[in-house]
Length: 128
Image: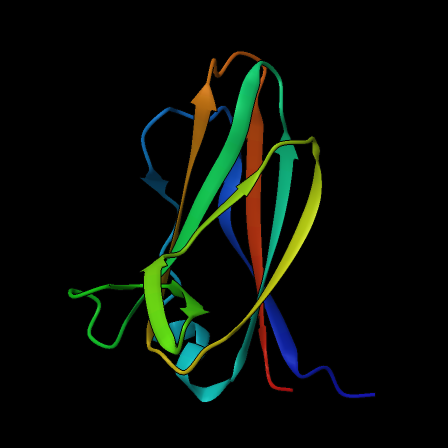
């Protein structure tokens, strides 16, 4: 069976900081825009942290990035907010996101005390 996806490292396992730090940018060389699905594989060791937070940003030119947003509908009005994912337990997490962009940046940070915390991020890029 033919493999129709590729795996790319974004962030090696490392202690988190309390400010967002971007991992390796996935760019045109990885054929991100020629595929339509991205799966982030996030491995998190909580240590003394309260939570791990990470966000996705997309760009067509590698300069101007657009943040992922989440919409909430109430009384017929959609309100969009910046999409930050947060996890509060040690574990391996899989986040699937549709894509059609040339560049992707994933940034991560910890909230609380970073002692003994670790975060590693890989992405799978493919076509559904």
